[in-house]
Length: 380
Image 1 (spheres, rainbow, N blue to C red):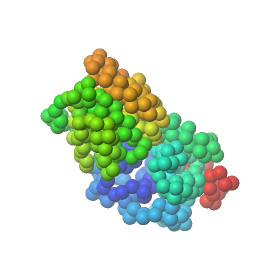
Image 2: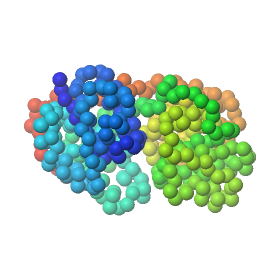
Image 3: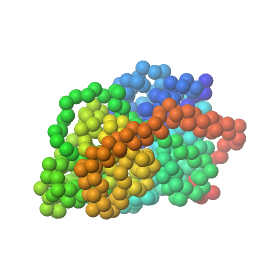
Image 4: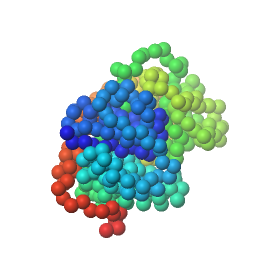
């Protein structure tokens, strides 16, 4: 059976980031199809993996997370071919771009976003420079490239045109399902707007805070619940600067059961992001019958479909009006829930796995062609 190495060295072991959650759901679906034999190389210990993966025949190679990504990519360029030969690997799949540009008889990489190019102010100049080097090296040495949304595909083509003829968009699916989460009493009483994600620049939580400050004047009982970290207290400071008495309720480190309950109890999920490569919380909310209000930028309208009320993320008044509509119009909330449930039918891990397998087969079909040495995209 064809052996596929799933390479995920950049993630923190035991900490389920969006990329890790996506990877584990995809791997589970791929294993169910039994077409390929899979090996996972990552910083995750077997005991920390989801139960659904620990009970499969997935081979696991645990490594230390590299301290300097650009150096690790260079090191993998040298050592991964030897590792793949020793492990009998036919296809190397880098689950994100911080992987190996060499190894295997064919290679596939997954691109989740391009924050460092689309929203460069989110990272330092040094990080943007080194990440660009990594992307050029990786893109120049892969037979097939997968993007998780059409929005990310457009960004990738705009920034690295030489990759255009090798890109396939394969949508991810929800990593949190209603059926797997037991229903319990509401954790937070009353009405609240829910925001999910760490307060990075792209999340645009300042605009949400400004909108909530205005909304709170009309609806003094409405709360703002934030799931994630906010080291700079962006939300609280913006509310205070607006003269609002509203203070955010912040929850960190919660499990899927609690998150599902928060979605179910929320008046709506608000996603004010300036940029998203995909946006799992939209599908999570729709799966828990939670209305969605999201920005009309990047991948969020693509993922939300008709199951969201959209707004300009640079206009806090427009966001406040959208939230006011959801709060005051039950018919609108009901419509968003119905359309959200319908939208979810477009996303399935089983469908995604089949599409990834098509990509794998296309990459492997080129195995008889002479393999080029490592090059950098745009430099040949």
